[in-house]
Length: 308
Image (cartoon, rainbow, N blue to C red; front, side, top):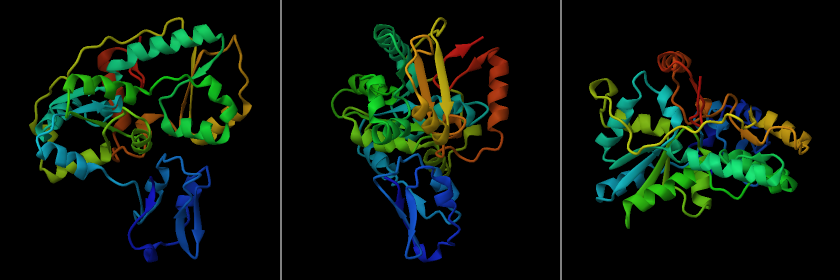
């Protein structure tokens, strides 16, 4: 899914893209960068590394705009990290409706059932299970650690599960678009039946809003559609690691332990989804998050759980 575009003759040969890829999926051949498809995990960190913007993931924005222009009912599955894009994140919900989306729900609205399913499987197996949330980590396991796939439960990712729920609500002809910080979701959506019909990154959404002249400050705060209650993880042993290097090291050293964590959440992006390469360059991201946490009186993880 990741491609070299544009005039490669302007490539400065800085090899920052190569240094950014822990998989070695980028090489220089005859003085030009090349993507090795059999190694690429579509995590997208090479995009930010290229100073000339020669590395891209094909955008699906034109397709999404065409659906809206042709009168399709198009719903949004919104990744929870949208809450750090603005001090009043519910203005983003209003902006999405202004763009023409008929329904805006948070992806984590399916979290309760997802977690319950994981808990049931983990308790039944007697050992740990990996989460399927991060498509780059799932791809890493399939390519380098196929013997560990027995610990990856046959459950859809939150994006895929929520897409199916939304599609049922929309009926025939409806389309579902996932919007989040992850380039790899485009690859997942293309490969998994029933997943989102289209995927946009937050960076693409930001560009779209700018092109349409939509200013968040001029919009009201609007609630997302749908109702859900955060699921408590009290009593559930879980562990999270982030960054592909750390994930690979963990997988290489992994030994099932019946007394250890039950749910293993591995995330390709260092620091988790909040720092995905599909996020706009927002310098005050941490400030926004801390302000929201102070107002809520607790903490909220990327998967939507609340902790006091």
